[in-house]
Length: 211
Length: 407
Image (cartoon, rainbow over all chains, first blue to last red; front, top):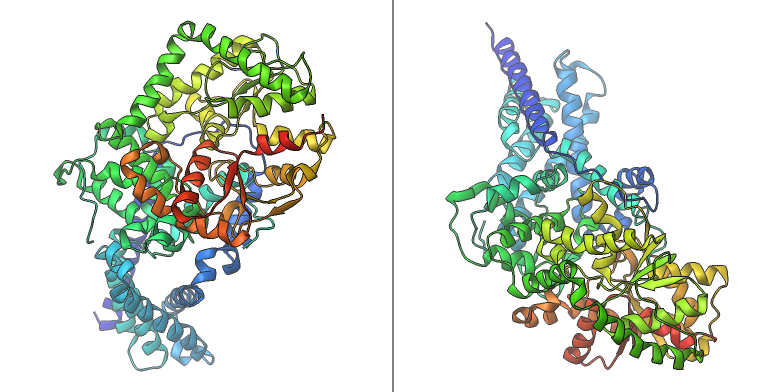
């Protein structure tokens, strides 16, 4: 078995492991009982739901983003980088992307994502509040993701091989079930709860607020 | 994690009862980005890591994870849940993930109460309310006599010798549930009289200290007194006086506890007033309130209750110079007196310190009259006025409206 085949097998096993691990965590979460809310709604839960996932995500609609625009931008770039690496990973399973014209288009997103991830790590180590509230996973997860972005960038730039890129992705996938990365799924549950709760009470969508 | 809140072994039975899916989602979703820090009035007043909502949430998670292996430190969980979070939910509105840290602190309160760590005064206030519900005959006559003496004030202010404070009248349209004290009964009684509605007064007070304890059993028993009374009197609607948590409790929480919609409508007196104003049933002379007035959004009425526009409809109708605080409505800062902390004297200093953002908001308006539609907020606002030298007068919305009422 050659190196490429072995790395592909490890990658596929890791991906499967991550998907099963994520599924188990979601099932565990959804196993908790739902408390029904029979109170008479004042407004629309559906409008609150849509607001929570659309306008409510805009930076000027949240004080936390308004006060910390760089953190907001850093987060956006980091997550765009992650989305880019997922696309790159998927494509790389079938073709050697470096032989494609336009493959360099991945690099700015991966590069900016890497810089954003590294900046977030620096903040995690240096900010007093973040240090105080962090678990070990708050360091491990961003380190792994940032390394994956870096390896993806190196792969696209032809500095590292596909095996190296897949190797980093495999490590990340094997760690994923124990990490905070499943927030990618929990986000949708949490924002749904938020939108429905405040929507039916008439707090969302936010109207004219004086700041 | 360096914690100023040592962990406490939770009572697993209470945890099992309380751990709904929404709590589990709040427990799992936080990524500890720390962006909630500035949304908490405790943090704004004193920017320490332990005042970051996510820090409190994480301390609670740690307690749950450690379970019986945790180092038990008396009062630590209680102090975190009762004295460092007023359940205002400002952090929830500003969280990129929508994590409900207030729900976690409410759950932490449940654990603290179950393990005997809750502030004694809150337990006593809740139990007194339950006793009153169990034995209404012990105070009913006394209560009715008291209301007769308050009727005199209503007659004087309305100029109508027929004005009354009807108590527990069967078949009334509205059951009005006030707080203890004439200030909570007389102004609404004047407004009810002027609007010519068929109303009656509850013999119970609206407040529910079981909610502050996170004790669902106590909270249900306290709420049930009013629900049973409303059913017995066959009213169409229950109107809650100027009290933030009482409104949110009966309007939004109680139906969840009992698993069904309440068989009557529940509104706040603020909603009712706003409706009467829009229908032209009340006429006001705004020149009776010439001085600049600002409004403090009670967290329970606004962010938790959904009453964003109604108080403003009333204020614009009854005051000449209404000035908004900044920020306001769903982004308004808690005054620091919410969540029952105003009743716990041992945390007075912390409470007054946490009132600093509110004091700054009030100062910036230049108004010398602050209106708040919640008794706990009014107590806190009065005290922070003294503490920060604001020189303001704190009043209720009904009182301000009654003052401008054209009779």
